[in-house]
Image (tube, rainbow, N blue to C red):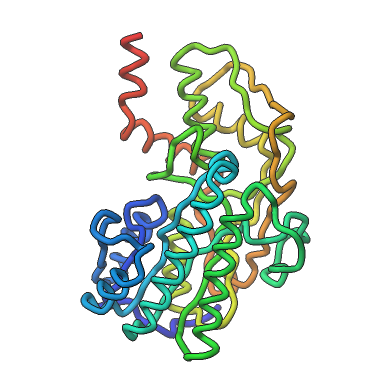
Length: 323
């Protein structure tokens, strides 16, 4: 097991994207390290504007930057808005990474995504599989932007000696997720759909695709724990995969979510809709070697996300009562 090479206690840490699911979890976790957390809303700072980003970083002088801000969404959103996904994420990455280096930021952690890997990558997917084959077309724009970001981190380390690192998390879920059937990722989208179906007494729920693709899921609190550990212990070129090591079919995920929310209707799979990558399981042995392991089993983690949804979206239940 590795030992700490960097202390977070007393450091000024800017979490870019602090209001998102990942950013909020990182704020909570990094505050436990005794760090001073810096944050600013997107209305206060548009990360797509280079001059504004450079000025804010220079004025606030963070010691550490964690880049969790991104334009994200599921298959439908990626297909409908590829220009937005490409432009926004390219601009955010280049402005924050370059602005951090210019301001003398000591440490930076860039958060990518497992969608950067080829559609037919070997399973489990090692970090070395990057750029060895074609990407999944349904999220290509987002993946290209994320690849550019992690390559920028590597380039600044190579050319300038910046102690910047990257993490490639698997599919995430948890409190603070984007529960949106059209624009959200698969787990929160399915959960919201089944909650609405249960409340409406709908006899069935339709799920995109065949249900056969297999995915790995990670609770956002486990990701935050891994990120804190990486900032303390990891200082090498190249990204680290972060995944729990278990996988489930989309069919199995749908059934688990139905059990969590108490939906007892039929689950129908629409095979005319895209499946996406057939299988995506990360080889996370390198981050395991640092001493990290996930704490949340999938069903327990989904229950945690469901409790959060209940606490934040009482409107769903209120509307059902009125109806």
